[in-house]
Length: 131
Image (cartoon, rainbow, N blue to C red; front, side, top):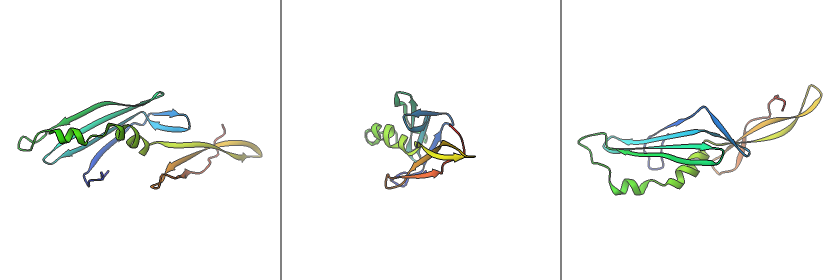
């Protein structure tokens, strides 16, 4: 993944998910960026039924010849963005749509994903799963 400032970031998303109202959210999200002369920044966000929380934030200077962690590195971290924007990037909204399966009226799960303009678009049309 590439960040807004052009740096590369590694993102790890858990397979386990949490349902929050009409959303499916990964239970844990991890984010790591930096290196190559810059301190590494690592953050872990955990999501539960009560919402998301930042559970770990770490800075580490990995190169002995590179600069260490500075006050500006700490100022650059936006906890609110980690908890809202970062989690929202990997959140899927879902809804129920009416379908007719073998002559029986029922509902199917329709998954919706965010587009760049924050609108919603279907990423998986209604499936044939009965609910």
